[in-house]
Length: 117
Length: 115
Image (cartoon, rainbow over all chains, first blue to last red; front, side, top):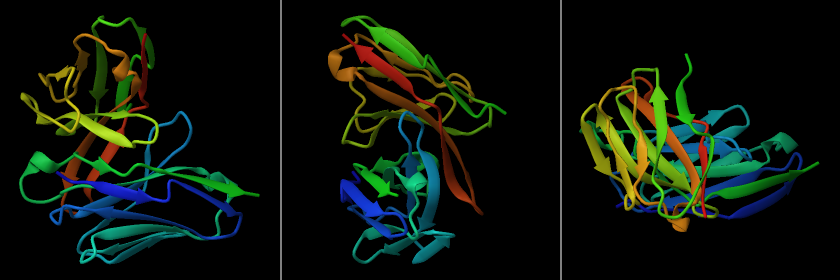
């Protein structure tokens, strides 16, 4: 099955700095890579996602890059703010072919991001 | 539109007891799944369903049963609770659309402690 590794496990930055979180996956059939933000005691919230036919996607201060050859993808947050402090999870899934793979995510272990004012 | 609703939000069980975590969605999504979240391990898939009457095991299915008699409901049953099942449980639902892909919606979570 799929295995997703996420690094670093903790990341501390100053407000205004950039933050980068990296993930690698093992199954070359995976083609959908979402990123979730989870605040303490809350549910995971989708912040950005990318499909394997795209190399980069950006949404305001957040961007995700994907390298299919190397099987890794990264989350980039620019101009970090204290409200960006949370746990971030990457995930991988297969989103094509038969429907039996839909809704099945393999998650990374999470990164605790702390943004200091 | 309530989205994905889980009950109960908090529960304490004694070892050996059984219980059911309820999950309901009102978005007519085909796909539903259950995850557990433990510290430092991310979320792990327990069971999932691609439609009414169809379920399958995920990464960590032992000790749990599911059924999907309707599109809306996907209950998770703990047969004989063990301390190792102390965790936060998230139900999720999703659909696939060619334009937007497979967006997954999570419930608010259920905190379960087994003593």
